[in-house]
Length: 206
Image 1 (cartoon, one colour):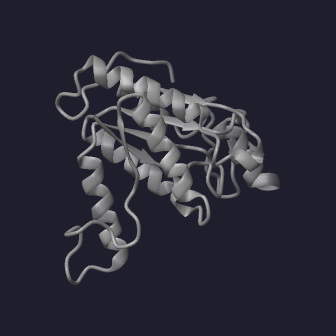
Image 2 (cartoon, helix red, strand yellow):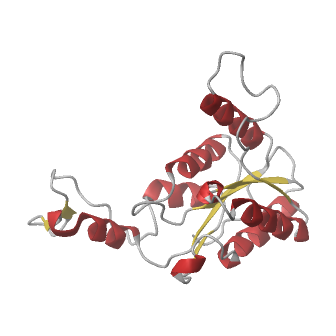
């Protein structure tokens, strides 16, 4: 049973490979095969002769996702109050395939609070108490760890979302929350026999 490991660790110049290897080791300990995004150049046959390199990476990763039974996404805030947009796309793509998606974040802060902190003095309250930005756009605040569509998709698929506060220097290397997602994914897939490329298991708390 194959699990796609989505996350911005691919941008770690010096530690990305080591983090990916440790993630695969944790997956293997639970009877799963961890699949990391493709590296520069994509997969053989993943791009056409006239395709630019970046499109080859996209097609290669999409092919990998289609070949997996579930997805675990690192939704730790990345360069802003929300998760890495590429990871978000991959989570949504797997959810669209009807397979289990799980997620974790190495921060205990809530999405609304992080957004307000990023806005700073530009944020102001409306008469009804809702916060908005300088353009009059409301700040989403459902006391969730990220956008409702992310946690909603995880919950609807029967998956698990877990968050843990870690030291700043370990934000991209601490895999405690990831390991909980792996254990949950293994239980879900093994209960379903891994049939049909990811039949959802019983719903977990998000």
